[in-house]
Length: 149
Image (cartoon, rainbow, N blue to C red; front, side):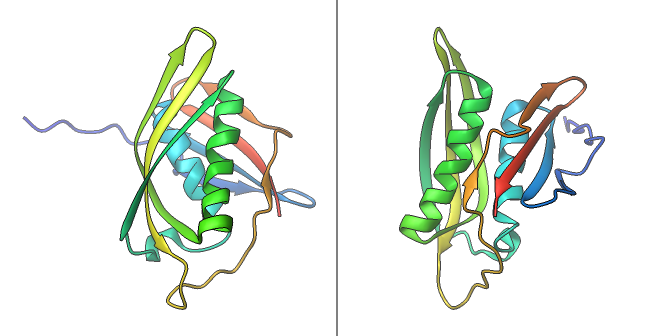
């Protein structure tokens, strides 16, 4: 039997006007899907993830006291992997967010490739911020993030 997936009301992510930095909203049917779309929104400010060959996989595990801190740490880990290891994210898969007694944990498989002359970098995200961060679930999950460019 084929299961038809409900289409999101919104695109996976969209950029919003911001006077100095970059601001986006990411959407998903679940927190995991919205977090994966937020990861793509961040890296899309620096390169085109759809053009990155998925040659490598990296498993990441982060923990946070709440969903906001979990998102901050997850997106910051993606920036760290780029800055310190030259890893270019193409996709975030198999995300699992687990609620614990004193917070949350997130495990994900990141697919991508190492930075090389085959890829064009056109922007720099310096940091993820808590400023104006929103994580809300109604019919679908909405995430809003401002990044320091």
